[in-house]
Length: 484
Image 1 (cartoon, rainbow, N blue to C red):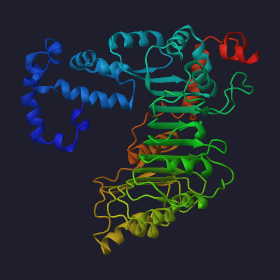
Image 2: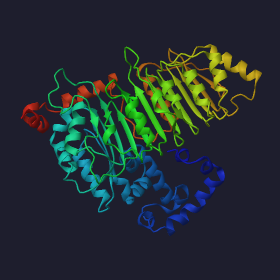
Image 3: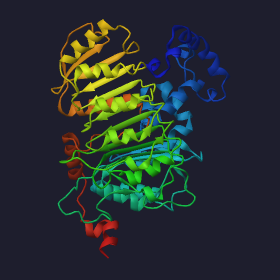
Image 4: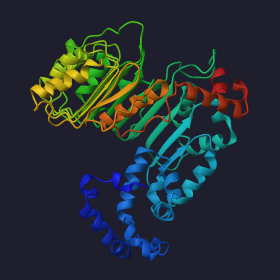
């Protein structure tokens, strides 16, 4: 258990650690919250534990990153269990999948008690058969729109087209403060019968009393730009869009003009046989002064999009599978001299010498990842340029590269060993997503897994075999309704 890694650098300093150890016992005795659990902790161990107040703050940060954290906290050790059970707000976060959802939901509800606060819910329903079990019928009735007696602050779904449709129909998926919908848009069978729409889209309606949306993260889901209020949006992530769900300029640019608080933007287009054509020339020069993190990917006019934006405070930039030149993208961004600190170029071919020259335009760069983006000449070009000009990239703390074959090399800091590391296949896809998340400082909920990966396909097949097959037309309520 490496708790110091969860704290800031200042908190990790020796002086503060010493202070925490010395004051832990006193804080536990004086806190009214801590008094309820102090009897469960041996007095001899108090000086080695974080105080209750600090640990609950850490718990809050952890559970926002993954809604299943309460299930982990109660099994780490007796102290964590005591703190987790005493801190009721922790149990307003719940993560449900195929493993005993009814038992888990009832237990979380019991531990939350009478505390009336909005819930944060994650549902992992990878196959339709899962939603037809008796336990999931109970979950459906409990969470159904119009019947639940609590508000939902954050909702996250991992599923396929049919389970997305089930959630939209039963839960009335409208606008919550935080929405994260990650869908595998491949049809689970040759003849999908019971989906109200062949293309998943959100939201289908917005209630007049709905709270403003602050965070939107969609994967393979078409966003309904016409009925959404974007005035309070801080995070907008559109992953794996296709020709139907891609945010074309006539949808995206007017929406961006209303997003004065936007801090994170992701626009990702899936691989297409031909490049998508559109123009951003007719929308003027859009100022996004609050935007800190930008991720773009796919064969669409990325550089034309960047030319239409004014990004003076950009700190993180990821460009992946770009048809346009990444070097030109860096040139466009550098025109306003943003304090760029983190950069990732992925699956784009760039000239090593020109890349090093272009990187020199960003004096604040501290982290660079190059994934299948250059050739072995980069190391020589980088070291030669630094030898000629030691001040170039003086703030750089990390420079990692992966070539097209998955061979890893760290140029900064200079490694102490030359052990060869190769990352390929599904592991490389996972590593790439992890790097994107690090560069983007991502705080939205992650997808449970890569839903198009072979391992996830194998899991889906296991789940289909595990759950009893039920005739769709007779037993699936949504299908029965649509056939009438």
